[in-house]
Image 1 (cartoon, one colour):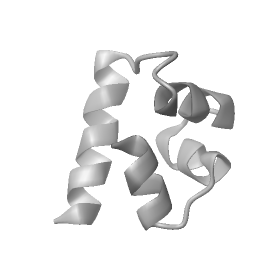
Image 2: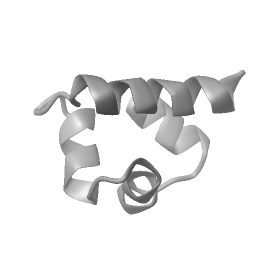
Image 3: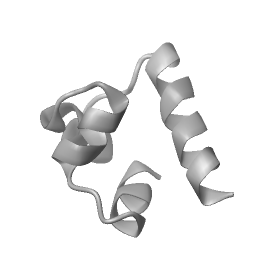
Image 4: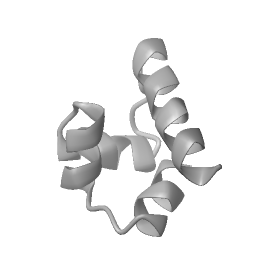
Length: 54
């Protein structure tokens, strides 16, 4: 979901990380399912994605 959003909006890991308040390595880890966002961060990620895809 994060990867699809990132590519659909032409964002790099750095740019998406800046929007979400995390570094680019964190975004990459989320994409590879090596890390899971905290509940608070996940709510924010989901709200950003749904806001821009609706």
